[in-house]
Image (cartoon, rainbow, N blue to C red; front, top):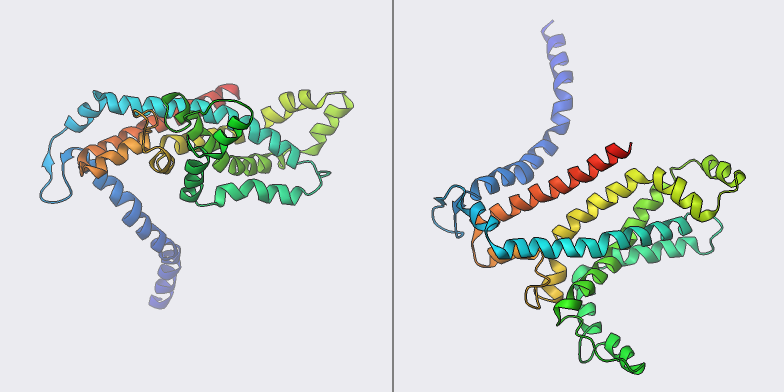
Length: 292
């Protein structure tokens, strides 16, 4: 009887033992750092010595700091420059790649994903060279047609569009793959019925493809919203947040606290970003539900 009881106990414990390694890693590298950062955000700590409890002072400082709101505004402008254009480009490309009659379709799929898997720092360095005001290839081409040089990375008017173009080139291929997977889940009979009704390609795209891809499109929007507000490497390598802080994104502004060893304020900044991004994501989800 004792042996049977022990065997039953082992069978009951077996599932928990299998998931124990994942739970341990998740607690060690996700839950504990989150709790530690939450506590740290209420302190003044410079990386050494005892942390001084300051309550809500870090949050009050950030919410009344022009630099914090400027970084959010910069990220918001980049979002406007990137997300709508990226969705349109990715949707058109995905629809074209979904055509079984397209020649070299496999080659195009690989070509679109290559920028995404290319190291970001390498791409950013290329951007610095190509868009250099004095020696860049882009201004060289403008000079060939008689147009004046443009300060792509040295003027507030052009720095954000140039950074947005880098982000578009780097990540649009990934969004194409996501939308392509959504397109392949749509039943072909829907398109056959539309064709029999005499629907044009543009009408079919707008009235059938886009509504059926609504959830996939919303997933892409949420995913890229996270990426835009966390953007750090692009401004760090290409513009260093300039000129005149015009490309200091929310992610880059957070990095500035770390360089000053102001870890308490940095932790509070990270939590405010989490709240803002979560709020934006909930808005997108609510819009999706309202549409349903």
